[in-house]
Length: 74
Image (tube, rainbow, N blue to C red; front, side, top):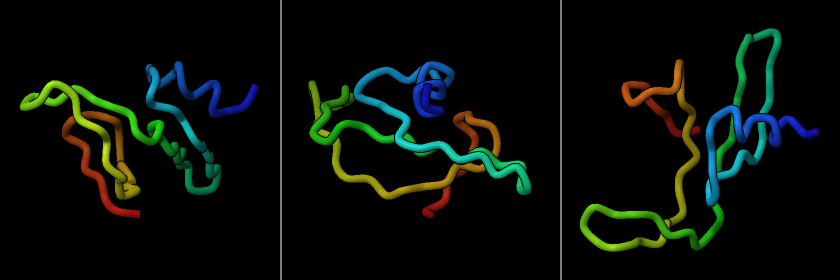
């Protein structure tokens, strides 16, 4: 089983979200997880019924995953 297959349910991701890649750096003690969505996916929008997702900028999240964590472009 691939590590991306294990990460998907561990993070609670459902389609169209998928884990594309994960890397663990033992020396740095860092786990990098790349999450993406299927191109053309549609998401709920508070001002419209559905919106098509636009291309995104890769970002790195530091610390625990929460709404208060910051992200920085890679």
